[in-house]
Amino acid sequence: YNQTGTQATIESNLPLTFVQDITVNGVNIGSGSGAGNTLVGLDALQNITSGSGNSALGEGALLQVSEEGKNTALGYYAGSNLVSGENNTVIGFNAQPSNSTASNEVTIGNADVTQTRLMGAVTIGNATWSGGGTNGLGIQASSNSASPFAFYIRNSDDTLITSVRCNGDTNINGDLDV
Image (cartoon, rainbow, N blue to C red; front, side, top):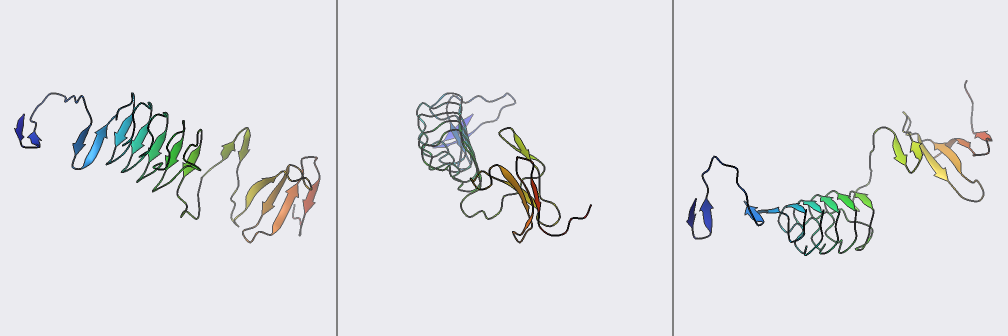
């Protein structure tokens, strides 16, 4: 170990253990003040005082979180507006939860994202949705009073192809080829 001013050189064949956060090439690496936190990035978890179980990867990720835990942020300033709230996952460049105190929320992308792609089936609650055929087909649910719990399949230009109400009635617009 050689130190000159604020610079240190470590030459060792042994594993290194640090008892505090470190900065490597301007990137902070460590756990902040809370227990069980992981941070990688300049100003990541900068204000953490007692929150635990947070993971922040990216400059400014979870910047304002201080006492809450179990949050995960991946991306440049991802979740930086979150002040309190637990069990959030925020992914993407400057992606932010719905508000500064959100809990139990997943956010993918920021306000500039115009399309989100999820390949394969998606499960929401107890329902599995699969869609996206060759002509921009998709499936959406509606719970309005005029057509309760109906499912619609629409073309990419938003024209209705078919709809099915939960009572079993089927409406078909256009030709039906069987």
